[in-house]
Image (cartoon, rainbow, N blue to C red; front, top):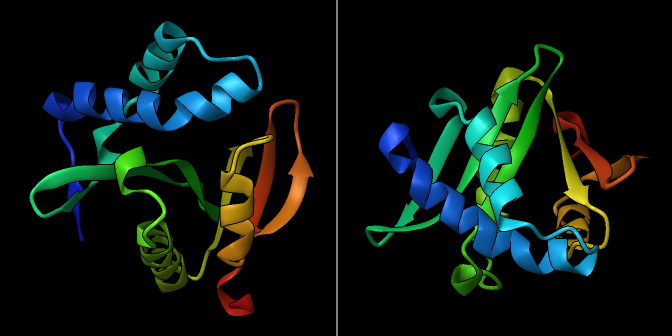
Length: 145
């Protein structure tokens, strides 16, 4: 897999992938709105923090990682549904955990309550640290792995 810097021309493909990946979880909590999902991501899009994940010349996912000085915040991680379930998510998380380890920073993220992502992050060594209105917040510590 390759983790490549994105540019403004990638925005539409990333939005479409995000909507495909998030739709089941958002429908489960009664919050699926493709227009809102599109606007929310487009309004916060920052190519500097975003990496597209390429496998065999195809876009299979992307992540947004923000340096918050005291920790890294994994703001988005999406894998196209047709590539889920084959271990790629674990490889991607290991890559992101390695980035955190290199900077000696913890890694935090939020996962939508009732999303299968909650189980996935627990399996990757994250610990649940907080529950908010719509999300569970997780943390991974480099020295705890």
